[in-house]
Length: 101
Image (cartoon, rainbow, N blue to C red; front, side, top):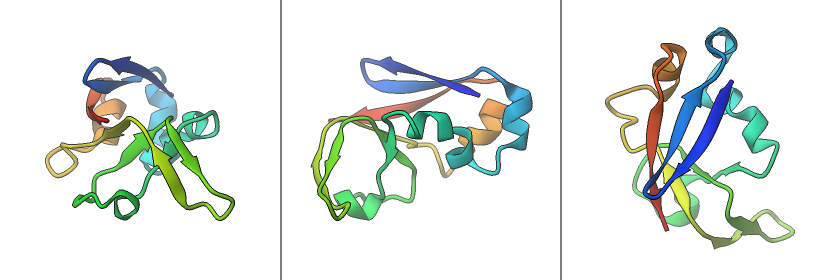
């Protein structure tokens, strides 16, 4: 459904199957393939982020209890208040999320 392309200062989400995206319940459903293969969601409260925007990473470690113990680069949906990532992808448009180390 979505291809992820790492950029120097962000992550480009590229729609590859807009028909399948039309059936996705939400962005979590749309990115299920990636989150089953090394990527994971980080809750803003886990890192002290003052946002409700989605945070995605492939550079995190958790202890046996699931507590985040190390976090590297994350990608954040900084425009979540003005545009829906999923709506943009469903329309065939790529979206870039901001990177933070």
